[in-house]
Image (cartoon, rainbow, N blue to C red; front, side, top):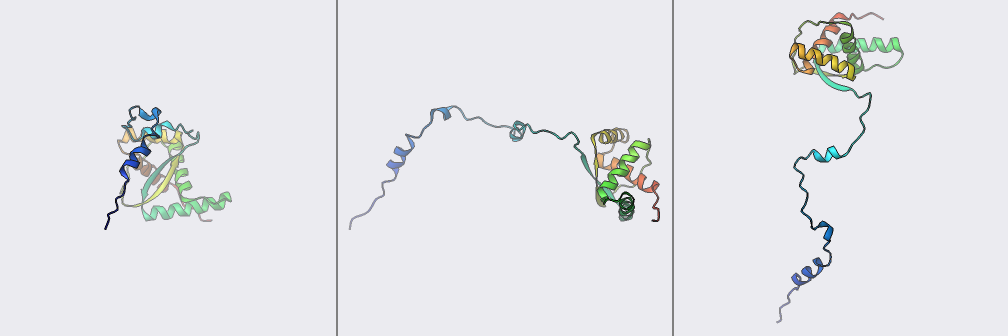
Length: 155
């Protein structure tokens, strides 16, 4: 019996040789920083960009926030979410008051999003520096104070 041999190796060498491109012969460019790819895409940044802060609050505070959002919705005639109401309270607090008492903070509580414009984010940053706390703690302190100061009006 005769044996059958595949003659593949010489054909591969012949195929690879004609397809070499001289432009790609230079040394390959190494990317040391993986974020370098992101830096190359110069995307526009929105002028009304907001900073999102997840603020922990107690269940009672969240219930009060939901009631206040519902009352505001009835008064305005449009639906106001919990995030919008929390953001409004923090902005009102940063605008009206200059000091906020310390409040209990537990990161395991349920969180509420607070979205601030750049102006209010800068004001909150000043309180962060003054109190030497992170952004979440400062926002929680302001929100807690505003929830305590705000009364629930019967509609």
